[in-house]
Length: 335
Ligand SMILES: Nc1ncnc2c1ncn2[C@@H]1O[C@H](COP(=O)(O)OP(=O)(O)OP(=O)(O)O)[C@@H](O)[C@H]1O
Ligand SMILES: [Mg+2]
Image: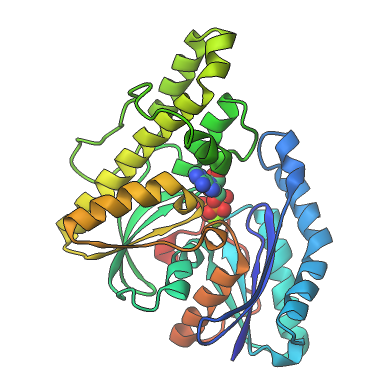
């Protein structure tokens, strides 16, 4: 069977075709550049940009897969969480296609999609694993008993990890969204230049907090004159990244040991962070745990992961009703 995935929850218009062996035949991702001038995603602008791009993105996905809609056996689309206008564009488009051609439709939880990116690429990953979801809007440690069965272990009390990366990047003049740029910049910086706080690292439990760390960077930057600031951008980026990665890695290892889980995955946009992959990877090796993460293009929003999650959902629960609506604050536990 071939599955068509549609993702429009934020500022990526993406359509993909995968098969039921988790082979990606196409995964077209159009990132809306228009928001960089506002320093954040403007929901109404995003909705309009999705309307413009959804049809050409869909056509490109079918063309690259060398298929027509006749070859598609299931259509999956993100129903939430995300921005309601953008969600409605992809969801309505997908439901329209399904209705017109009598193809089964399945609604997908975007966070379950991020999680499915690992399953898509790593066939030897245990069904029972721990995932650290680190994205633009979420930071969560989740025990996956098996696909569709989740136990929340901890989450952030305030900012998401990606949000913290983006805010610090903005502070350092690295543009928006700046997580990936901060990662690149940090490579030439000294991670020991400044010892920023590691919020909640020694606290029991698995809660995260990033707003204090972001404020500590802002205070440090505020004290520097123009010359030292521009001289130390890479050092500040590396020191912030080190603190964030240290907390994320420490809590993840602790949670895996506490729950006696040996397989760990990273999901979401920040899973593309090279320092997080390497620090957590080393600590997992030392602790006898296995770490998996998606290839960079499957970490940030894309429709292949939505198609993969949709296919799992379909096998477990059958199709969704065509009256399914967008749910902006959909929780992973509701998946
Ligand atoms: N290499 C990287 N290092 C750090 N952060 C990164 C990197 N690449 C991407 N990011 C961050 O990942 C985030 C985007 O991830 P993603 O697309 O999963 O988030 P989202 O879809 O906006 O949020 P959510 O999935 O929670 O709804 C942004 O905050 C971005 O800066
Ligand atoms: Mg996302």
